[in-house]
Amino acid sequence: MAALGPAGPEAGLSLALAVIVSSDAPLLLLDGDLVVQAASASFCRTFEIEPSRVPGRSLFELGEGEWDIPQLRASLGAAAAGFADVQAYEMALVRPGRSARRLVLSARKLDYVDATGVRLLLSASDITEALLDAKRRDDLVREKDILLREVQHRVANSLQIISSVLLQSARKVRSAETRGYLEDAHNRVMSIAAVQHHLAASSLAEVALRPYFMQLCDSLGASMIGDHDQIKLKVDVDDSSVDADVSISLGLIVTELVINALKHAFPGDRKGRIEIRYRSGVEEWTLSVSDDGVGMPGDGATAKAGLGTSIVEALARQLRAHIHVANATPGTAVSVVYATHGVTALSAARAV
Image 1 (cartoon, rainbow, N blue to C red):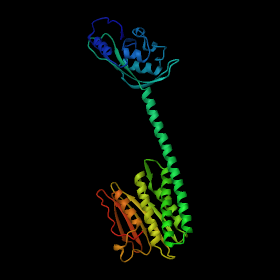
Image 2 (cartoon, rainbow, N blue to C red):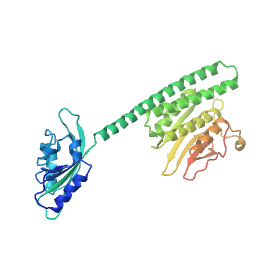
Image 3 (cartoon, helix red, strand yellow):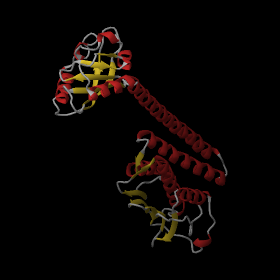
């Protein structure tokens, strides 16, 4: 430590000097004119200043004058006058031939008995590396975000290619049963591709459900509805947004229920409408897919469960929701309901 000899036995000043001597932090003790009375060795070492050239000099004369900043002068002057302490004052320390440093300064006027003058304790923290680390973390997060979105785009594009291959294969096979399986696989892959495209264009944190379900239904309609004047899809969704993981499960449920309705609700040339509806509250939400088709068969309670039913059941369990299937008079309504204490159960279902 470099320090001026005390002019008298001032207990308060002596205590302040002792604090500075014992500190590992960059500290300065200033008088009312902002002249340095004492400096910790850490201050001199951190800012590369010769210790012998510190005491007795104005703060603004240290180094090569890099501390002479008008705003810093004004702030320390106000602190010395007792108007306000300096708290977390951030400044750039620019020195010729050296890299700029970012500092956070704090200054407090010391109160002690029998003081012969004003004393300010000034501390300086170098946050340059901390800011650089934060920038590196932000850059890494940004790069990860870009890479993830690129992967999502590529996955969606690959799924569309796969769906095209499945559709071409379905057109070539002679077996009606095999053709049906391939067409079902094509429709499911297309819906997953729509999910991926929407997630790639959405925030990674949350997904708005209305545009998401509309895009999903557009994709299903384009691949499964030949005459859009005969069967219409309607989306009635509130302004809810959900986590990306939840949106995927909801999207797959909508896909399975819409495919199910398109396959079973409108036999022959029957016209009709399928409505996808979503409403949410503070601790609950309801997703429903209803149609005005032929309704459930008379033995709907004992109908054989198909792959789509199993998929919907599994996704509902994952969401801790329960499922209710009922006659809509006409047609069928399937609701997936989440409440705080929801239990998953598929009360009745058509084979999908």
